[in-house]
Image 1 (cartoon, rainbow, N blue to C red):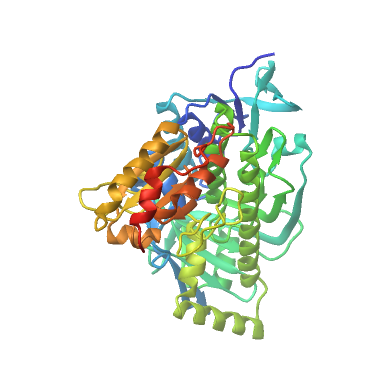
Image 2 (image 1 turned 135 degrees about the vertical axis):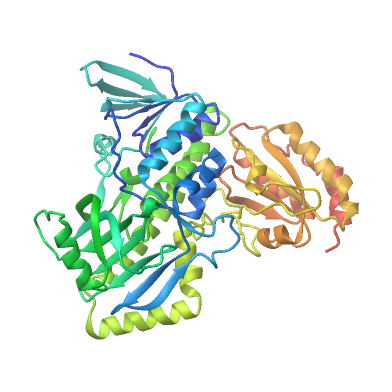
Length: 538
């Protein structure tokens, strides 16, 4: 039996690679295995949303991917070939990435592999998981290599990122309930002839389906058409795709020189649970859904980012195992929301005709004109709608302006005098960060803030960062007069309070630590905090 790495990641798609990078960057030893030798170079997933670009920026690859990809500002929706609405990213709130990026999945995998190599990690190819046995202190994983060699590896934690058919999930006996849609999707990556804007995608609604055109890098277009219900396999030919395109969209559009053709039945399913003892699931192993909205790869990558800092902390012994329960709570509710939203979108475009289609189109027009589609659907697609307000990690005493505890903290530029960088650039990768936004007009706060910062730094469990509160930063963080914010490594707010009330914020930070030693062990508040309360007269 072999041992060594505290974490075994099964699968090296975008989700497994993201999780591996998240662990390696925090100093966690990890083995990542992949059963195939060479990854497919077909495009598969193509959408990268703004929140995911923030994650990739923390890896140093966002600009690289943006340079290779195609930026889209909106998705236009048509009925009878007339545009009736547009869902854009202009009203999703403060972000450095107000667009969706279209880029083949294999390009994302290549970039993540380069990050992993730079940080000293690697993927063990031609290695499959064949068995899992759990104990109270670890997991024994049976691994088989292509040559037939069998290894029994002892690890602390195992994460299945091995896709929709996940052997890990099956070995754990975790249910994967849901349904298959009767409709078959046919896809072609080809040259699209005809006048369509290439800074946006286009959804043409028909009476029995839809045709979606998504500009790809290099002058190609991803054409997606919804075929009629069928029980058998549909052969994806260019003629068949053209026939369905013209049923739903304009006759003057045509495809040529296809680089890839595919057909598949879509499903919506979710694992009964995301954690079973020392084993966890992420990405398609945990949830699959309709491709409407381009959420699949993004949801999985965000699973990995949520899990990465928590698993690293647990593996290092700086957090208790119950921290991993918050992963299941937080990401299960996100998966439920994504499955529900994509299901509604799919049903709205399939088999809708007559009066129902008229009502649908009227509602879509009205919401688009009022900006509701941008604010609600655009924000949701971008990855900024989901919140962890019900998470055990979110402090529920403090409410007020957004972001509220559990919400994503906008990664906006620091705009105070003499400051550079962004909010997320201040966050510690492996611990909570206490972000002190100092109001330059309140110079009387300075001594008390210094006392607070010193106190937290001495404990060492929470990183302290101080920034001058400029007007844009104050508006984005809901802190018009300065504030103290406790922020997770993945950029979500644990607690925000006015500076005079920072003590209970630190108490909450202590609750996340496994040690009985607390940040505020003394029963009497620090004199510096009392001084701070007296000087804050708001």
